[in-house]
Image (cartoon, rainbow, N blue to C red; front, side):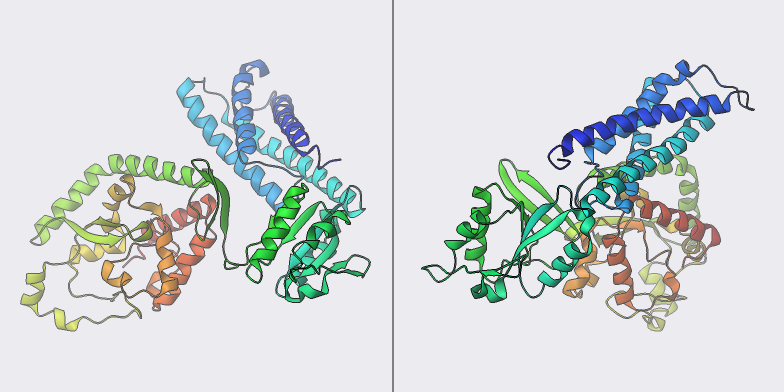
Length: 477
């Protein structure tokens, strides 16, 4: 019954979530009465509480939050709630600024967020545990037909048998590596799939009619596409929900979604995050912070530019073609930290150059082309500040893999090109993971791929915090 009314239950839980948020603020208001910071009457806070509550609920609803899904876990429930609260708080802050809401006690506002999150999390974890307990007891269990191969059937079978709380029972198993053996039923019997065409295409419908099947899991397509398509059509005709695990893609496909190209339905698979609310928030943060920092640092950057012109001949800014998202080329800006080429030739510094990093990229400690001022700028990463303009124009992000030179990309191996699948950044995991000690280019690329595979707004925040510390400590080169 719970599955049939899942949408109703999800809406009900959102209503309860809103009520718990308001209740948490009411209890906190009572608790803080007579404390050091005086509070207004609770009704004066209701517009603010209502706006914050609606922001959180809209975010959770947009993200499709549910504690009842077959794929929900305690970690995912807590994570989705935390993301909902974080994004809801951002919506509230912008809305409060636009609506010019009166200044209220920050201790009360943020204390209510903490209290309500604890209460809401406890509620959803409690209902999650109750629901899973019912499923483990076999109540309202759903039956799944498994269609796979020797490669993936053991894994999915072990998952379903080892996690009774999923509420999924195996109705039958079809092994595409031994299709002639037919369907292995739950009682150990086998039902044949032989047909006049020798492929078992016509009998799959009859087999489904003789069984109780709610879902059909397909984990093998490449071995016999015709049979799989016929079986999926038979399931579709009977209203059986289809779960597809594509075996024509690598296991490490991390991001997938269903979308439409106009009115054409499409399944989209990606190895990097491209869409979603998180990416939109990342781009909004890039735009806002880069604009703010360019305004705040305009005079210091102008002073640095004048010092560069006074120390050595040449322009203050260094413009270089770099490779960005999926191979797009753009002009990256930096403060010039090296002498001009003709000056290098005059000092005979060029013959002393040697690469200390394996792979297509050049890196050298104590490069003789770097000016005295340039060493200071590099040490504190001040030379990177003009890239805020690249972030503002959308060619770069605050956090991401470093943008390579076209000459470096030409020597990339196929797997190394995946670091181009995300917008390049001013800082990244490589910069805050001891870049001076990394001498192997493959290790550098692996750090970039690790960042892409595990990307989140929280990870970006941690990298930015570690970057600030590295800049203050002067650990750049």
